[in-house]
Structure formats: structure tokens, C-alpha cells
Image (tube, rainbow, N blue to C red; front, side, top):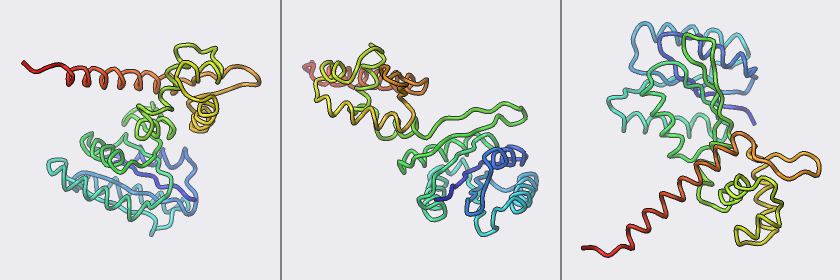
Length: 232
């Protein structure tokens, strides 16, 4: 299966060019360019990007551009969602949000969360050499696993990082086999690591996921507590 790069572009093409160069774009990969309302500078940036992409094995039919107006957010989200489903299909999504309007980047993120699509963020800071990445596994956790048994496992593992599956199962209140299966799933998405015969450990992204899960449960418990209070 190929990949679908979703790249937000503004007045400069370098952010998008750097991303497809660093990720080693291959024949069969797709590129979706999302930009704000067209103006001369953004048109030129997109032309430069498309020209370069076509020279590094990206077929012209695998490049698509759309323009959305942040002031018409509902229409923009609808256009982005429709294009992602039609154009990207089931390809793995790599998101580059370093270029263009921040509002456009926000619409892209909201759309992907709404579609419950897995994606990795590989993003540059426009005008600098800095970049950051967010792995697909962490995004998957945010979309599908917060407040689930997976969240219980990593939260308990953070509380006691020397626990094995049996101890985790006892503290959570479920079967040991369930914990083993959930730890295997969490290892596959990069939130848990295990070396040799040692106890499983949270990765840095696993630590972040555990923190979010804990805060989510706290807010949920607080909300339920307020609902149980008698009205005056």
C-alpha cells in the first residue's frame, strides 16, 4: 500500500518539498495539497511544488490540490473530508502542517479526527530548519483508545513501571490474558517497549498517552459526580 501525503502550503513551497524529500516519496504515493484561497504567491508555490514532485517519481495524476476558505469552515471541512476519502482512500496518511495558514491546518486536523483516520504528523516550522513528528500510534490512541482498557494498561504501567502482566491485571481488575493482548497491541503502535525478559516500559509517547488518559478519566469522573448531585 502506498502513502498519501497531505501538505498544507502557503506562499512557500520549501516546507512541502522538504517533507517528500525526507520521506523518500515513491511511485504510487499520492500528494494532496491543501491551501487557502488562491492568490498569486500561493499559486506560484504550488506550481513549484508540483514541478519538483513530478521530477521525483510522483505521477501527475497522483497530485491533487484543493483550496479552502477558513472563513467558511464548514464548507472547508466538507471539501477536505470528501477529497481525503475519494483521493487518499485507504492509503496511510502522512501530514505536513508546517506551511500555509494555521486555520487551514486546523481544519485538516479536525477533519481527520472526525473521520477517525490514523495518520502520522511529520511537520516543519516554516522559515526555519526545525521540524517535529507525531507517530501514527499516538494519534491512533487519541482517536480510538482513550478511556478504554488500553488506557487502563498504560496508566497503571506508568504508576508502577516494574509491574508484569499478572500484577497489572490484578490492579486493573481484569484477566491476565486481556492485559497480555492489550500490551501486544500497544507495543505494535509504539507506546510500550520491552527489551529481553525485562518488564514492559512506556515509550515517551506512551507516557504522554497515559497522562491524557488519566486526565480524561478524571474529567469524566468529575462530570458523573456532578450529575449525581441533587439539584437545588
